[in-house]
Length: 144
Image (cartoon, rainbow, N blue to C red; front, side, top):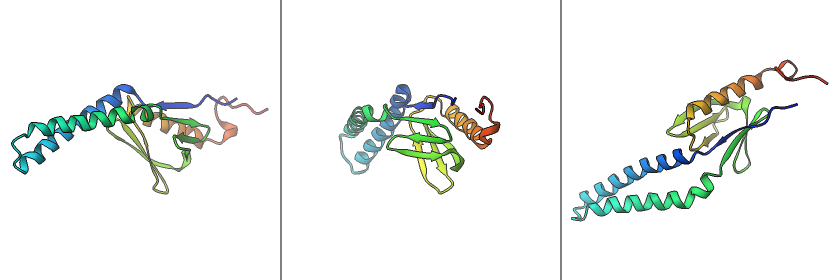
């Protein structure tokens, strides 16, 4: 009997917090651009930056928050028919609330909007360690 898949779902709070940070950068950038060109209405940059990121967040929320990655057997499966054999994962690292998975071939995948990216990486490493054990000697596996 195999274990149920381990799932990594996008977190609503991480999604919102990520967009808040991007909005702050967009607001400052737009205000800076208006200041550099000498526009007297620098404040409009803050409004434009906030509106742009708020619209982006609203528009993409349904798709991004439905994304689920799972570990099934010896593979990491993601949205859009992505599949990565656990034995091919060379590196993982955090990028804000994202976990970047880099394969031996150099392919890069993002597990986005994780509430605890460090816990996601730890779970991936545990799954890799278990998948490296030959199937006949794995704990809780019984030959029939």
